[in-house]
Length: 128
Image (cartoon, rainbow, N blue to C red):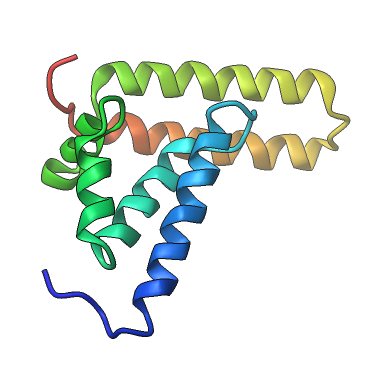
């Protein structure tokens, strides 16, 4: 894979590092999704740094998930279940604790339903 122009490389690396940081935060903060940021980080590194991209693909925890996604656009069943539980728990917490107007609750519910539909319509990834 050829790398982009030299002035784009630092931007992709910075974007990848930012997305990786947001993915880590998303593991602990409700309603901040980790997976899209992880995928964006991998995409940024694929365009800017073979070393960082390879590191992500070889990572013990998220490497297999990224390889499934890059090879087949697939998500492992265990990741689908984990994401579903996290999304539903975050939504329940938000509905219980936040004073959202009905339109905000509806918008959030529709967005989360869209995310769940996307997740569950992806092919199943490798073995769990």
